[in-house]
Image 1 (tube, rainbow, N blue to C red):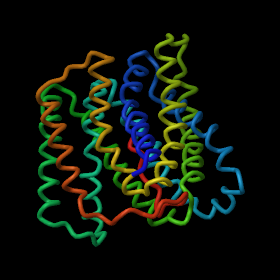
Image 2: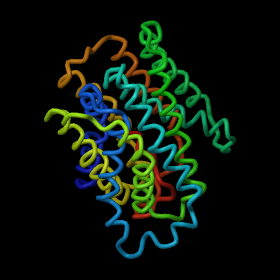
Image 3: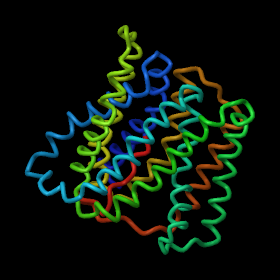
Length: 302
């Protein structure tokens, strides 16, 4: 990977490692989940749609409306609600670690639907190690009265596992930028009524507004643009390696900036989930050739 690729990789590791921190600041600041998700999706759509309109990239996209709706629902509409609602209870670092199990869940989902992908002994070992890491992390919360919040994060991970399958089967011929722009626009429309109904009576404080702006402009709009640039530079498979770094960023940000505890279960579970994800996803198909049109729209997992 060249210097530009490493820079983009580092940016992505941070940009999509800090949303959990910002979500925690926003929901703890009294902003409702619908308003939070509406702000993210609406601003992201406003930034990306004009770029997608260049050169007629949206032309003919209506023919793909069914997979577009399905992908938007499972990549943005449902998981962004679940993650934000879960952080009303969970710490940002725990949420970031739990969602890191997405590659493991993706492999299980692919196996269940009969994707034809062979799972050898090493990958089965990775699944077992990763699941053990999730168990170590979730056990205290399950005993402490937060089982639904843990379930919400794991359900979001399931959504992130299914969404790329929809993209691969129904959107493989469509460039990623217009797909993302349209999906963000659809999600913003879905969240408009509940956001209006739960709009805050008073202006949130500056810290909350800054976190909300960071989520919308940096983690969503800029994040997708950098992600597409990274895919063009190094290919889809290599681009997705940054998802192994995101949990470390999420934990570091939560501990350093929010004073969240760094416990032994968190450290152990991080190691188990990371090792399990690497083993479980080893040996998959190689990189797609760097281009502006990857074979499928990858999952953002933020």
